[in-house]
Length: 386
Image (cartoon, rainbow, N blue to C red; front, side, top):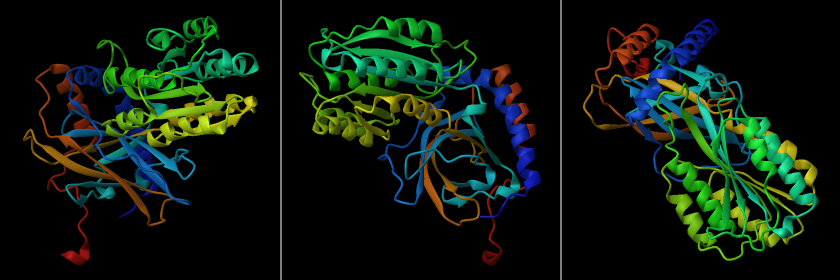
């Protein structure tokens, strides 16, 4: 792949920052009209020792011919790659590589955009977790809430003795103060822990929250991703779902919903492995704490950092509107100049946005920022092939 000059790179960052601010309201409108799509249905990747990887979470073609790819990157420790720019990106449409020198795509960090993340906290409220373990877990959950951005939303489930196996402590909520008050009301008095049923319910909340759209179409942000954070020892008692059934559901999901598990308490490590299996199968991370409760604060901050470190790649498509699905690949070269790319793939639909004046206004803005190439050729033309 050809490289982008530093001047071009800085210019691209500047205008993409502006576009990200201006087009968001219309994206909320368009996503309410379902002009978005999930990532492809393949399995969830993991980086080999010494390597890294990339996962496409969502594809937004609301302002076609402009397409947005929401991606998560990770190294061998499942930590995000930092400070990525256009020089790190390889983009292929229907097998042909975009030429970065033609400036037909750019990348931004979610951290610097207005899209929200969603998280469901699943807290084991059984008596076996009472005492220091539960007190520390609740403080860590509060820290997770404190670490979110104002637009990010958190829901809370407490695993307790109810018909469903859990209490819905809070629906998705942005107000950190309200979440903290509801968290403080959780009673640690359950007799059984239906872990799998509760995690399944949390995943269903994420799946039903319309990832990529907004609960309120008039809101000023959209939902970029949804994840589950579990505080438990992994000892399941009486769930209607088995671990295998839960993992089967996770594997079949079209959009990844990572499960981050904090396994703690005095239980056997054999129970911890239940959480390890679920997290690793869901593209999440498993943390084995045992009785080292003081690590929880740092871990929840790490999870928040992962959620806020996704990227958005915006590119202009040159495929005519035909209502069909078209394939793409997006790759990361890390570090820059290493010559080593890792790719993930997906599809977008070449569909014309509806005739709404606000949409036309933003399309005009994007047309100015990513002008149509005179020859309609965004691809890299290898000299040796001419």
